[in-house]
Amino acid sequence: MQKVDKIWLDGKLIDWDNARVHVLTHTLHYGMGVFEGIRCYKCHNGNSAVLKLKEHVDRLFASATIGLIKIPFSREQITAAILETVRANNMAEGYIRPLVFIGDGEMGLYVPDPPIRVMIACWPWGAYLGEDGLKNGIRAKISSFTRHHVNVGMTKAKICGNYVNSILAKREVKLAGYDEAIMLDAEGYVAEASGENIFIAKDGVLKTTPPTSILKGITRDAIIEISRDLGIPLVEQRFTRDELYMADECFFTGTAAEITPVREVDNRQIGNGKPGPLTTKLQSVYFDAVRGKIDQYASWLTVV
Image (tube, rainbow, N blue to C red; front, side):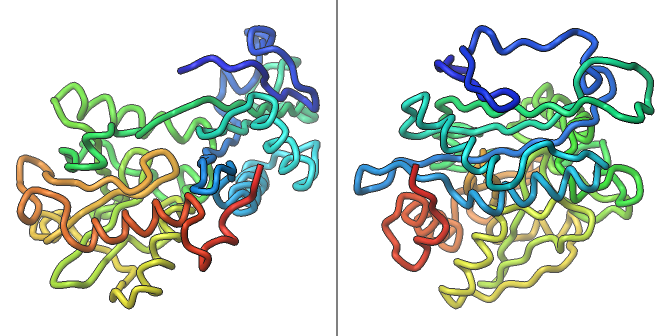
């Protein structure tokens, strides 16, 4: 991670090296906090713009509601703080991480009136799964770890502790020599990757997991919108791992991963082993959209 100058903490911009919390911070011990991942892109006209800022802030507050966390700032204040943090670091392009967490004070699982703190950081960050992965596709493996059941981990919320499940899956497949993990739901259907949603294509039709047991990704929604605008047939429907193996194309979507093709799953080549025509088209339109080249999607962007 590349160090920048300032981090926004509890309403103030402070120096990166001074952004410290106590070792008895509640979230550090128990994992109850919520966060977002947001990208800022340098547009073709030289401006920098945050992608789908409102949607990310809304999801942060929704996650907090699910986690019974009352954020001590309004949506408008958090939105302004995100833009202020990007500007303070003169960051033309990169990643933004808001985090709402329970501070130090009382310990134990139940704290009746916990201190809620908010942090916003940003840093330059390239392709999450690698530039070669964006261009040529990655190798994925079905993990032995099951995605949280909807009555276990509150799958609609980006709760910090939920991601232990993803970390275990990611570590498992990386140690086996793969790039990313694909996780099945509690009934054995394909759910999502460790930090991305998944799409497959067969005979010109796109299919993606319905938003039941998965985190409803903001990039996922963008690709669904682009697909419909392009007239590409798309269904939100559960599918099995053998259907995944037989797909013509497969790709992941996510703020960090953007649109990353998958060329192989469990040592089985997907399609012809390289990004297919639908993946390539969607990837091209998406990157043009986030860089402000398509007026139709200008509303996605908030100029810094």
